Image (cartoon, rainbow, N blue to C red; front, side, top):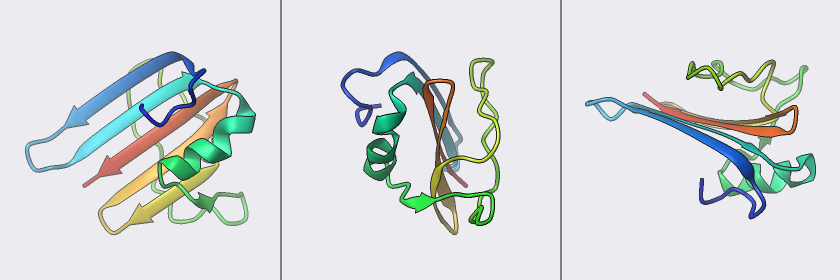
Length: 100
């Protein structure tokens, strides 16, 4: 959340931690689309996702009722036991970090 742009509004967060170190972190906030790329870079999601090159995306995490991203994220990063997804929809950035 500290990496959100200064003017971010309507911020919602969800955290789920497990005893074995697995976790899910979800954040949704209203930001201008023009600030999306900079935000994605700040959280380490540097790979651009397109329909032709969806990368190694698993899928958006499940979360509370306000968590409703649709389609592919715009940016991602991943490793053997973690991934970060960043999307933008209807004026909101969606941040999804998970480790397993």
